[in-house]
Amino acid sequence: MARIFMGGDHAGTDLRAHLKQTLTEWGHEVVDLGTSGHESVDYPDYAVAVGEHVARGEGVGLLVCGTGIGVDMAANKIQGVRSAHVSDCYSARMSRAHNDANVLCLGGRVVGEGLADLILKVWLDTPFEGGRHQRRVDKINALDAKRK
Image (cartoon, rainbow, N blue to C red; front, top):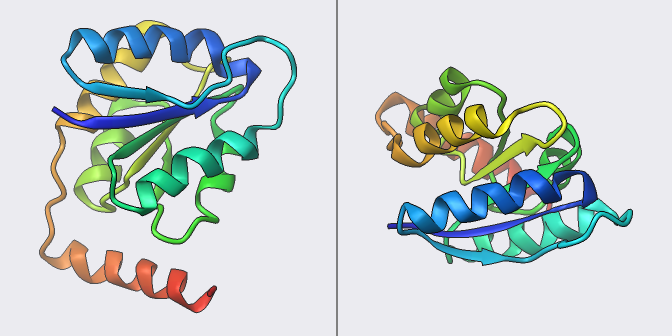
């Protein structure tokens, strides 16, 4: 089972709480980095907190904000993070199989609980294919290194 670092802003609180329960039922270790309330907070703070754990290789990440876009943009600024904003199962599968995404971003105001469960299951169950895709991931990682 996976170790999953999760976080997000006030708009993602309800979906994150649902997904935390789902992941726990599936047997995963969940580290919830917040927020736990509905008061307005800044999503980049939570994207950074999750992304730093992922970049250190401690597990994978799950971020939820209103649309999933903001946390995705913020997380992708962290060297070593390959974040994917996803709202369907096909994109979830391809983000792992072809891009080796290590952070999944969902929109709490866009994706319902049932679809979010399916997306998360597909994303967690899909291995990276490597092969020709490894060369592309290596190029993404090289771009990351240039930002230092």
